[in-house]
Length: 369
Image (cartoon, rainbow, N blue to C red):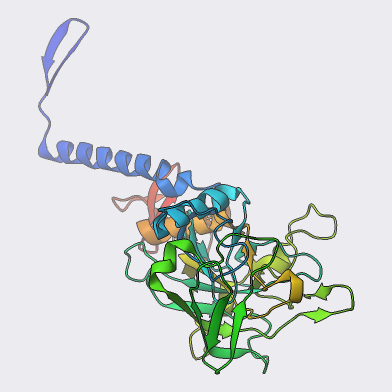
């Protein structure tokens, strides 16, 4: 290598050991730079939905209007329209239609499961005595393809063990243009999503009419509607469902993260056995009510957004899983702590006053800011 200083030309030859140290230093600088500006770090403030993956509503009086269907729209187009309404905290509104209609979405990073805490909230348009509950399910991208095609787990809400809840329920709707939409369930019951004078568009999702019918399966929650002589009352269930409790507390400003919050620790498999998930990649909400309420029509879930309730922790957990590098709290960095092994540099030297960079503790890399 040659360089010129003070008008003097000098030639310096590096030994192989010196060249190796320089290459190591350059590599470490690149790693630190990459970690400092990685997508996970850039997502630190992103607590909301990033994108909607699937949108398949059941027939209903708001279908084809929330979001609005345009001739020629495909399922991908409708999912994109849902994303535009819900992503990044926009708080638009998407209808799921009658029983079974669903939406699938993901956040900017997998949501970490923190013990004893609600992990994410799903926002709807419920208010006092107007709950239209949807069951919430979660999935981990186990096959790593970025698609919601993995095992789904139900979050066990307050009505899971209610004898009136029907598990393994299934219902099929049949398309009839601009007419009542007839349905039949797996219990032999029949009915229809009736048209009304307030909504004159097609009630069957128009981008799915070529199928001729739609079948949805899951659980059916108990009916919650009653008539008090002047109006229908639809009280909320205790916990664990979307569009079930108001988005805010009584002051109309404080987010109701308790009532609308979901705990990943509630997850159960198809047999009702608890499942230990450290994080989830996808969330699914489906209308779990098959209920007609006179002139107000079918009970239809609406979704207005969702939020990771501890996005910072989710980002840190994601960073650790994907890089193998953890970032301990400052209190854990003291090499004098008897509970911790000493910090060492990457070449094995003990470090008593760590600065920003990569180190080793207990055989594991950590990154100190």
